[in-house]
Length: 354
Image 1 (cartoon, one colour):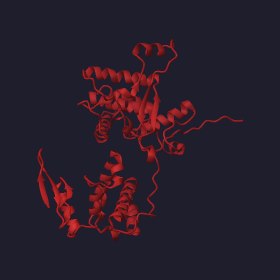
Image 2 (cartoon, rainbow, N blue to C red):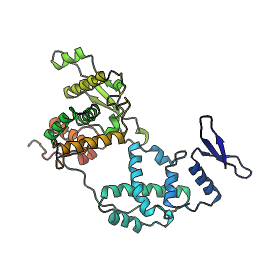
Image 3 (cartoon, rainbow, N blue to C red):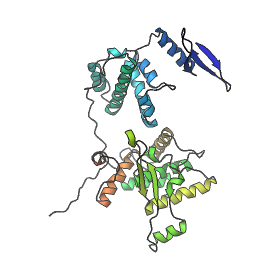
């Protein structure tokens, strides 16, 4: 193995097989050593689940399936791996069978059925990649049922949501932005991943003078629209479905407050919901600040443990109110049945008799 110094510091590594061309190994020394041991057949860990995981997530040559995953899915899988590694990490992947998977999912992880389903999904992906690498022949997760998980059934109470958002508006600038992000999700129904990097050029609004005329009813024009890419699209539609959200008076007022906060900072920031240093929030950073805000709100008795809600519940709030006010479900998924099953939390369904 050869180490080649780089101009900007560090090394790149490559392996010289006898009588062959050099094989690049990347810049990570430990990973380069593992690759060499694999090639000469002296890696004792070869064929273990940990060995497959390292190749599935290899920073230089990741598995095609890992490469296509969204950052949020990758974070979920990294968290799932920490649990899988405890049970299966040192085990040869070819020795895992369906009864082992069934016991792990339904007995060992019975207390966390949702996490168990994600861990089973990761193990399935690792087995598929193991087949590609030639270290196992079958996928033992196929046919193994996971404990049923019921979607949440309660949407945030409007009064509780309003009180929480009003409290956030009086907090630090970054908590105010988190609160306005929550308000946006409740009004537009977008996922976090769809609006965390929302930029002002995606917000198309008439000038302030015309908007005032529209809101006063003297001009019959639209208040504008917001264009975002729909997340969780597969195949050819990946990144191609654009959601065009009509701006309502409530959403227009929220955008005015966001612009006012932007002017307070005195920086011409590109992002609608910026971090302290005027960049887009990462999913993890936004989630951390949201959870801290919720815990502080509970401590100050703004909300209670019984009335607290998840950020994703705001999407259900939007769906529930939309159906109640508009009489139909919003277009959130390619399959409307998914929207109805997961997000519609109305307890009363109205219809007209003949």
